[in-house]
View 1 (tube, one colour):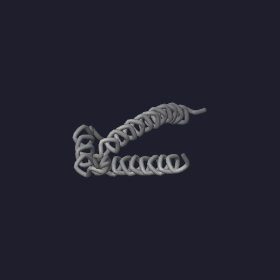
View 2 (view 1 turned 45 degrees about the horizontal axis):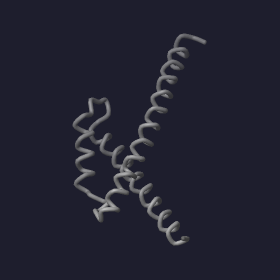
View 3 (view 1 turned 180 degrees about the vertical axis):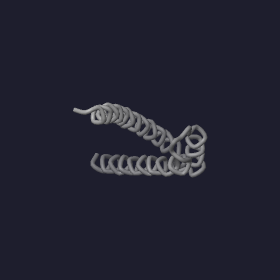
Length: 102
């Protein structure tokens, strides 16, 4: 293997390792978001709070050191938040079905 291929392989191995960590962190984040949703539902609080989403996106944009642009970070986090909401809806539906079967 030539030196260019070796360098590419090393970099790709690092990216694969980072991707595994990102997946672990995304799943940890999703678990926490689900817990927050459960607490809100139990106390009759609204699950969807647009101001909180704006705060989350503002926070990650503020802490972005690049090379991704602020807009890129916003788009990524909008998607993460969308998936968290989807997961929460699925969980709510599952709980409704369970309570209906009891």
